[in-house]
Length: 135
Ligand SMILES: [Zn+2]
Image 1 (cartoon, protein in one colour):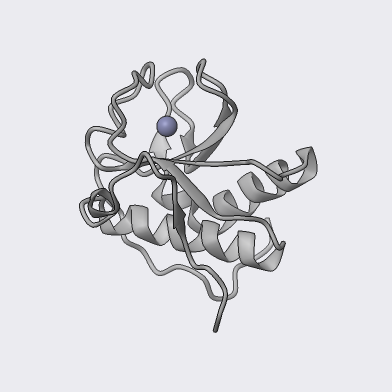
Image 2: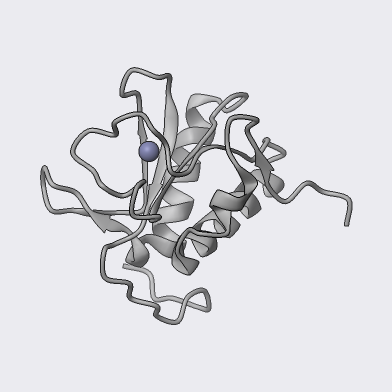
């Protein structure tokens, strides 16, 4: 397979990715799969970033990663958020604001629009994938 699995921004140390939580790597794998299916680039822009991600410790705890949405249209972004929440949403962190569990958030905290991926403080490695009942 000649497809790029994961591209890392030049500001990010590749070794940082080896220190993130395994459930975060799983979320990244799903993100990569979404990008591959939709012919979008899959680029990690920040792992243990220096910038302050307001109201969240996820980055410094190795359970938050930012990915680029360059080349994504509005529908790609919402499809991506839906895809991740459907497939690995149960791994997501609980938001301070409303206590909702989310694995992917599209936002701009002053450094450009991006998707913030996050996993819960206490990992719940459940069986993923497979057939699920429609809600
Ligand atoms: Zn972030």
